[in-house]
Length: 449
Image 1 (cartoon, rainbow, N blue to C red):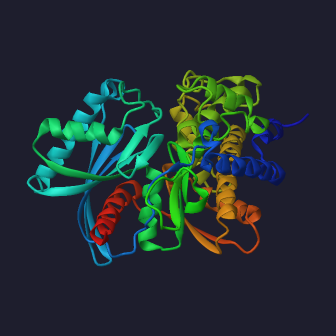
Image 2 (spheres, rainbow, N blue to C red; image 1 turned 45 degrees about the horizontal axis):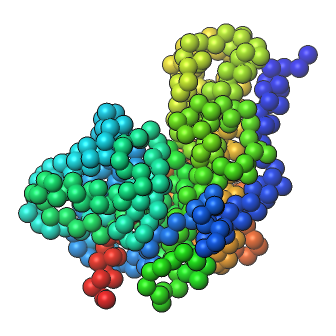
Image 3 (cartoon, one colour; image 1 turned 30 degrees about the vertical axis):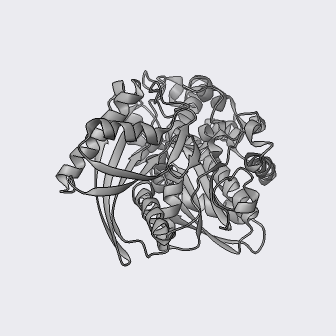
C-alpha cells in the first residue's frame, strides 16, 4: 500500500511548474508588457505598465531634509530623512489605520493621515518648516505626472469611498489645507515598487528593477523612453521608469493552464474575484491560505492527522503565511517550528509523518511562488537586454522566507538569456527612504532646471 507521504507528494505536483511552462508564462507576460506600453493596445491591456514620470535615478548628490509618507496597508508610516554626503539619518513612526477608516470615506482617510503628519512634525521639531514630501501609495495608480495619480481600484482590504478615479495627491493636499497648520510640498507620488528601486539605486547604480514580494506583488523597471508610447512628458531623456502592475497578469485567463483548484478557491473567496490572478499565486496575502486549502483536502482524504482536522484548520485565513516561512526554516528531520504551528492550530495530535506532509505542502506552494516571480524577472531582464542589472527587492515573503532568494536565483539563471548577469539586492526600506529619494531627486532636478 502506498504511504500517505507519497500520495501527498503526488497531490502537490499540481504546484510544480516545468521550465517549459515557465517559458510559456514568460512569452505571455512579454506580450502583455508590450501591449501595456503601446498606445493602441494599452486601454485593453491586462498588465498596465503605467508611466511613473521618473526619469532620473539617485546619483548620491541629493542633499537636505525630506518627509516621506508610506501608505500601503493596514498601517502607514511617516518618515523624516536627512541626506548628507553618502549618509542619511532617518526617523520614522508607524500609525495604525482603524478598520472603520479603511472602509469609510476618502475624506476621513486623508484627514487622519494629515493629522498624523502634523503630529509627527511637532514631535520632530519641524512643525514650522516647509518640507518636501515623497508619497508612497501602494495601490494601482494611473500617473498623469510626478505629482498626479488617479487611483484605479482599492486592494488589500481598503474600500474608502470617493477616491477611485480621483487624484490621491489632491486628496492629501486638500486634507493638509483643511488643517492649515503645516507647510508640506508633495513633490512626488510613487508606489512601493518604485521606492524600492530608488532606494537600492542610491547605493547601487546598476539597480534598474524594483520588485515587491510581500502582501502583494509588483515590479517596475527602467524602459527606453522610445518604447513608452504613452509618455507625454518633456522629451530628451533616454530612460523612463515603468510600473508594470504585474499582479494583474492572468486576469484574462493567461495563467489558467497552471491554476489549481486551490487557486480558484482563494480567488472565489477573495474581495476581488477575477482580479490580481498572478498576485494571488505569489503574495503573502494568499500563500498561507493556499497551503491551508491543500491541508484541508489532504485531511479530508485521510492523508493527514488521521483524518481529524480542527476547527481552526477548517477556518479561512487561519494558516498565516509566516507559518510557511517558519515551517520551512526547520532543518531537515527537525519539525520543532512545524509542531509549534500545528499546536496553535489545535492539531497537537499530528505525527511526524503529518509534519512531513505539511512541510511538503508549504514547500510546493512557496517554490511555485518563487518560480513565478523568477519567470517575471527573467522576462524583464531579457526585455531590457542590459549586460548586468541589479534587482532591488522588498516585501515580507522575500525577506523572511528562508529559501525564496535561492529558489529565485537558480530559476532566473535557468531562464535568462545567456550572457546577461543579474544580482538580487534586499532593499533597506524602499517605500520610506525611496519616497524621500524621489522627492530629493525631483528637488535636485528642479534646482538644475
